[in-house]
Every structure is written in C-alpha cells, then in structure tokens.
Length: 450
Image 1 (cartoon, rainbow, N blue to C red):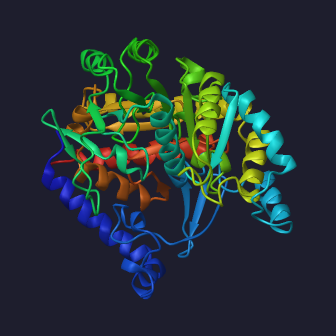
Image 2 (cartoon, rainbow, N blue to C red; image 1 turned 180 degrees about the horizontal axis):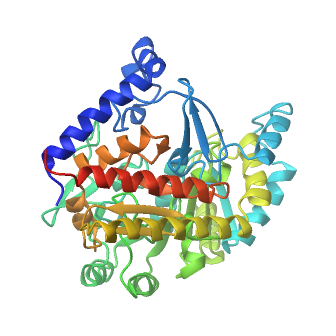
C-alpha cells in the first residue's frame, strides 16, 4: 500500500535533515583516522543514518548526543541497558569497586552472595560467569560436547548467539550452508552443526532421534531475525525430545529475559538444562552467566576428574572479575526486580496497543510482536513461523526510513529490525510521544503517491 517512490523521497528528505542536525557527529565521524572506518567497532556503522550519532551521555531512558540532542531511548544499548542507563545504585557500586581493585582472579564476598541471587532469580542451582554471552555460549557448547561425547549441535535457521563460529549455519531454500557473512571462514561447519527451521516438529524429531546431537542451542522465542514466536506446544515438545534422546537443552535468554522476572523459561516454561544470560544482567558492564541443573553439574565434575589438568578451553582471566561481579550484585539486588518488570510490562502493553491502533487506523498490512518488554512492528500481515519467513518479511528500505524519521524527532529504536525496549524508567509520556511520531510517519508515507 505504501508507494516505493514515496519511501525513497521521505528517506532522502530525512537524511538531509539528519545531516543538518548532527554537525558535530558528522565531523567526529570523519575526524578519527586511528579507528578503522572511524569507529571503535564495526556495528556502530549499522544504524540507518548517514553516519552514527556520537553519544555524550545517557541516563535512565534518555541519551544525549554531542550535538545536544536528547533522545527518548528505546534501543537501550540493544539490551545491554534494558533496565535503564546508569541506575544510581549501579553507578555507586562501580565507583566503590573501582577504588578497591578491578580484577583479582579470586572470589569475593559479593560474588558468593551473587551465586545465591542467581539461583533465586532463575531457579537453576549452579552458575558460572563469563565476560560476554558469546563466551558463555561457546563454553556451553564445549561442555555439552564433552558431557555427551557427541560432536553435533542443533540450531534454528536465522539464529544468532553471538560471535560463536559453530552457529553460523543457515538454511537457504531448505539447504544448509555455511553462513557467507562469516569473515575468514575456513572450517566447514556442516558436519557438526545441524540447522532446522524453528517450529518444525517433524524436522526436530527426526534430527534428535538420530542420537548424535550434543545440545540444542535456542532462544525460547527467536529475536535476532525479527521475532518468531513458538507455536503452541513446540517448546514442550522440544523439552520432551531432548530428555528422551539424551540431548542437553540450552536456552540463550540474553534477549528473552525481557519476558519477565527469571526469563522466559521461568515465566512460561519449559525449563532448560542450561541457561545463558548476558548484556543486561550487568547493566552494560561486560559480563554474562550460564546456569545449569544439578545433574549437569555432577557430569561436569566427573568430566573434570577424567581429563588431564591444564587448559580447559573454557573461560579467560577476566571472567568473573571483581567489577563484573559488583555490577551484577547491584543489578540483581536492587534494579532487576519484580517491581521493575511490572512497570516494564505495563509500558510494553501500552506501546503494543498504540501500535496496533495505528496499524488498524491506516489499514496497514502489518503486525506487532512482543516478548514481554521487547516490542517490534513488522511490515507484513502474517507473523512468521520460522527464520526463513521472518527473513522474507523484512522490508529494509521501509524499516530504515521509519527509523530515521523517528531519530530526527528525538526517538531512538534499535538499528536492527526496529526493536523497542521498555525499561523500568521508561515513562508513559515517552511511549505516547513515540506513538504520536510513528502515527505521523505512517500518515506521511500514505499521502498521495509521489
């Protein structure tokens, strides 16, 4: 229904507006020769704007640029700051720890308490700390292969579990391929990584009944290729088949912790054998955790007794450093609370209802998906059933134009498929302003054809 020429014209206008409003950011983007492509890390260039906004500071659910613009922030560091930027208790805890040392390679009193806090929040009895969720997923895959004496892992088409080579396999027209975007790919992953479509019960059963899969690594709801919800009963079938075939079930809840206190598996079931959580658990300080059942822990201990001493291939000297432990201790104790989720979920419902009203008013062939405090609008009528359908539904030109329009009006969405996060400090006023500007954008796109 939206004319492509109109999208192109609006995008051109909004790009010019962005350039005019972000003079200092533009100069900064051209001013550094030390950084490759002028940024410390490449995904800073993945925003739909002509160049990235240069941040000056962020607090609660707002971000201020070096050009003095204040944005209502619904990106929140793409989940890293899902519970708000620099909560006061976190800032105070980090400042205190900074004066006492940052990395000891020894446990701390706070760390001992944190272990009990993780058990209480997520329900699994044993935990380990890593520096990133990528590192946690990599460690978990190693453990699963070691515990089961099986080489293969099972993933879902379109998944993303961080910078872990083992998961970079896609299905294209039903055929498994090594993901072509992986730089420096030299090893064929296909002999040890099996990819199937999410929600495909027949493929799931056929694969697991082979008895050679060490683990299934999955998000309980796919969030990295748009949003793909689990079909009724699918996760329960996944849990049953893993149990019947001796396959370890791993839930990467780095994103789906948005579902509610304790993550998606605690809110809705089923329970995994191993759970990974990263990013937000430290309020943006690099850290992640993985937890596991008593049965898995017993097998880990037996495996450790059977192997020679020395390098395990799991973890680094920065894992569980004192700063990361302090960050998680402050977040779990005082920021990531049931009350915080009550507010986040209420704001999410407000946003979902408002987006639904815009879609209905303008008779758009779109839909809204959400996982707790994580919300997306998708420019297609049918919610995708798997990764292939989600990939096909993406309209990058339209999505990027909407993103840029909102950015120019002081609203930041995540740069990847326009995901929006609601934090404990996101206000109803911010949600309403997003909806107002979203409605204005749609109205402009639906004006008489260019």
